[in-house]
Image 1 (cartoon, rainbow, N blue to C red):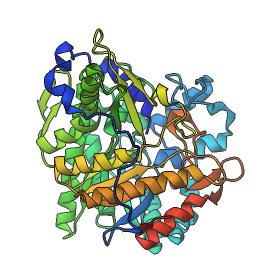
Image 2: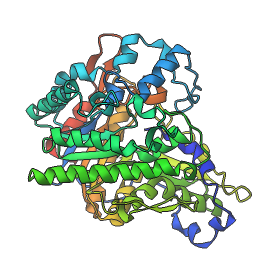
Image 3: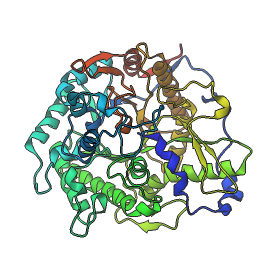
Length: 506
């Protein structure tokens, strides 16, 4: 995911006024916690429920050979025009650019982590480590590289059949994502009305053809589906922040409401297609989305603007999309957008959460619609940060799980959690994983029905506009040395937790 899109979320709160800062909003967000972990009695062994899924994740475009997609076209243009500008820190890549993209060979730019040519090795390694789940994506552009296709590419279907067979042999359960930010290139060609992408008049028809092909060929081999990965990150990055294709810069989420609505409708259609196929085959599927949830905190506990705007940002970013799926109505915080979405209500069998860090909100009573959004507290600059400048705040995962469980009454899947650590011994990643697994266990003790914990990522991979610099893999990839794989120490740690289905105190 890409956290810095939050830096423009403040501009999306154009409908807020000083009234937002009054009364109930002040108390809607609790004061900042003094500790970064949940205070609870220690347990020598934290055992997880039987059948718990311990996995790692990848996405097709980030780890495999580029297909005929919008992202591949964007990368070709970036390289051709030498658009590689970025600030010193990750998350500061200039819109329309990819950090340091020109320093890598053509093979690396094309093949990313080369998972599609090394998957047998990678899946065997995951199974040997002790993982029992792997999250991957089925790329729309691999199955439908041309708009005139009525049937999916046989080569694409064959590749995913081989991938699933390798998982089956390693006793690994597949979790499949359908839309992980990437669509076929042709999807963004204008239709007869000039509309592109998710706003095309035939967008949902093309999407339905793709999802139907996935269902026909892979249900019930695949039972766990994530229709949309981080829809809010996609919406802001692609249509407001302007850093992901199609590189648009609209004023706010309300100005991109048609895209928002199309994503909700796409999820609803996919849910019904997958369930109808499963029912016809006397099988079960579990369908949901995964949301990029953050722990938002007021920078100053005493300040009403910080407290009030924190509540508003949390609602807009963490809950609006999931609330829409639960209710069937798209309501965008701090706007007058309120639309029914046909067939949407109740279309989630689980709630997926991706979680990484905490974000601080600093409001301004004179400019209530333009708060500052900070990745760390300037008063605590001694707090450790990872390679990407993110702090570790394990307690936030616990609190989000408990809140989501109470809010939606559905099983919970953690579909991404991880950190960037380039060190050979990756001690920071090991500490991060132990702390977040502990918080997951505590959330279960406090009533959250958590059923999966998936690390981002199995491999080092292409981290979107931050390029190949961040290292989030349990397995290191030497991009310029034949994509050589080297398991990090965190892989052994996580594998031991998975095999025991438990975390032990040190």
